[in-house]
Amino acid sequence: MPDITQVTPKDIPDLLRMIQKLCAFHGDTCQMGLADTQAKFIGGPLTGLIARQDGRAIGYAVLEWHWRPMHNGDLFDIAHLFVAEQMRGKGVGKALLMACRTYAEAKGAHRLVIGTSPVNPGAAAAYRAMGLDEITTVPGPRFEITLGAACKVD
Image 1 (cartoon, rainbow, N blue to C red):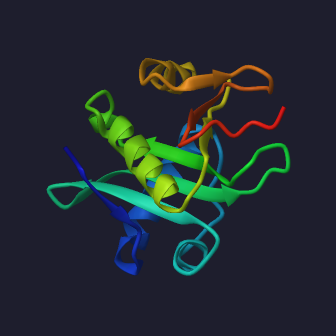
Image 2 (cartoon, rainbow, N blue to C red; image 1 turned 45 degrees about the horizontal axis):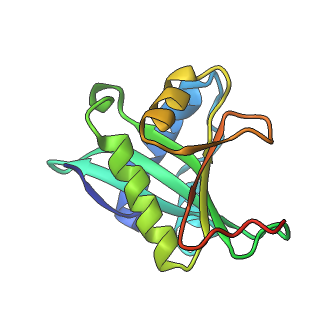
């Protein structure tokens, strides 16, 4: 099982390399450099979790806090979830997702949401296999985990 910790300054180079790989996977060019990445994750608006195995970075997740007036309580959106190609299918994504859940619950959030590109059916299938609830009322695929009491305002 990987060791998952919150991103620290020493993790920024590994994090940026994985962000660049995710951008490339989606056909994008990453515009962020080391300074930009550090500003976003160290004292910035984003929370990063990094997975390591034997000291090697093998995945990461990015959490963004959101408030929505249609829900009671805060939510965290997993903006990125990335697992190195050679580590896919080995439980790293699920471990990162559970670490995100633990972090969000510790911060008092009521929901954790994640989406994926419609052109990435493998990610959607993985989230379904993990038992996440699919959100069908918005374009997706999008999924959620309710933390604590149900929080939807009717």
